[in-house]
Amino acid sequence: MSDYLKSYPNEKGYFGEYGGSFVPPELQVEMDKITNAYYSISKSHEFISELRSIRKHFQGRPTPTYFCRNLSNITGGRIYLKREDLNHTGAHKLNHCMGEGLLAKYMGKKRLIAETGAGQHGVALATAAAYFGLECEIHMGEVDIAKEHPNVIRMKLLGAEVIPVTHGLKTLKEAVDSAFDAYLKDPVNTIYCIGSVVGPHPFPMMVRDFQHVVGVEAREQFLEMTGELPDTVAACVGGGSNSIGIFSGFLEDEAVRLVGVEPAGRSTKIGDHAASLTYGTPGVMHGFKSYMLQNEKGEPEPVYSIASGLDYPGSGPEHCMLHDLKRVDYTVADDEECLDAFYTLSKVEGIIPALESAHAVAYAMKFAKEFPRKSILVNLSGRGDKDIDFIVENYGFRQ
Ligand SMILES: *Cc1c(COP(=O)(O)O)cnc(C)c1O
Image (cartoon, rainbow, N blue to C red; front, side, top):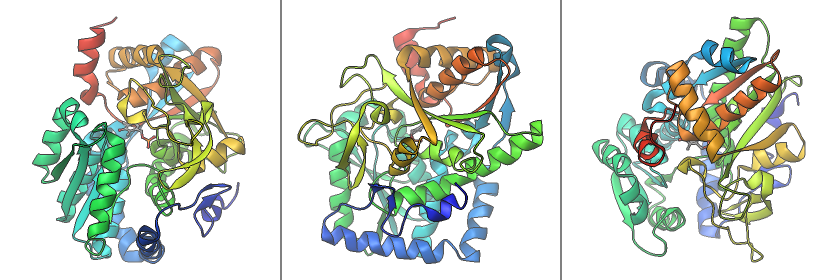
């Protein structure tokens, strides 16, 4: 696995047989422009030093790595958290949104455009747009707008225009189409910003590169704290950006086991979970090839997770390759395990995790009980303030 980051993806955007770019010719022209711009701009000294400065002064990086003494006392083992919940805006998504915004600035773009489901990506991108003084247009299904009111307010306060999508099921899928249509009307002034390591090349590579900082920091911090590397590194997998970010710091350390945790939801029936690497099959969707939950016609199946940030019917192409290579193990945590981790971490450590991140914490708690002599480092991808109303309304104050 040496020189891994330089070897993948190949020049056509493939991670093994996954990834690539399956888009209409007029969109391919734009993807090629972004790819070329990224390759030249991201290597310049100016870009790198500006991104460094943003991370330090605006985002508050490096985020800490933290030993959960209380939790480890209960479970056995040693559980550590990489605190992306302390990254500005409370989650890891700002890492790639600031990178995408900086690229837009260097490309002379005036406007950022994206879709959002639960609103997390929209808020992170609106934050980046405000920072760079760019316009921001977020497409969001009407159903999601009603469900995710606080994030809609946040986006508007940050100066973004939220475009309601009123056709079809009025959720994420329609929002994607709407955002792509709007983008193609003015690709000269606009750049499309994808919210995870998914979509056509170059996005899985770019977003991975911008999230790499998480793994680099965590590895250094863990070594400094303990004098050794963790036995296992775990992270939740929706599209796969926070997990690839932390994994990419450890891929070349062959003794470190990497575990991606997918949402098993409420049952193994299709429509009740969103575990595409665990239960899916290879196919093409949203412009790239990956493991996906699909019907016989190759269309995405409905998905569900208690954590809205994880309910995506595919996974980043790099994860698909790492799955086949068996370099990363993929497993699942269900809603109940996620809830248990959510309540436990809040109460014993004073850290309310995002429901997405709680899936990885759930795995860590199981691991620690099973291997009391081992250490596990979890990417705590975000804080759970966004989830508290939903949790208390539906599940109350559990002990
Ligand atoms: C969006 C989100 C995720 C899932 O996205 P990935 O691309 O799989 O990382 C995980 N955690 C939080 C807090 C999120 O907001």
